[in-house]
Image (cartoon, rainbow, N blue to C red; front, top):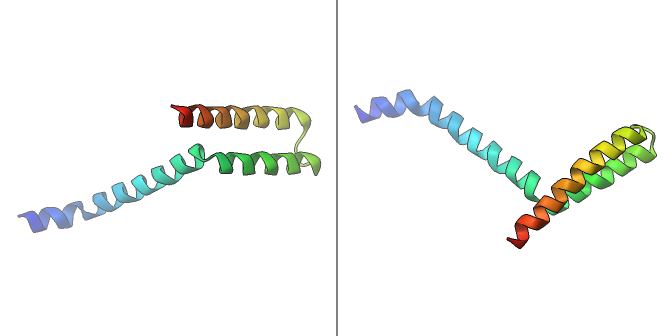
Length: 77
């Protein structure tokens, strides 16, 4: 009976495994100070190349700076 259960639940277990891996990557992306700094530099480059306007730049910069501040506060705790 356990073999049949393993066979029937294999696709679900695979999906759960993939979802966990995606979650790990997302957590790393959102909690890595270096990644946020890279995104800030890329944002500045896009602004300097006139790919985005000043309002959009300010909005995205504020979001990234808030993320950076949160990461630094989390590291202190």
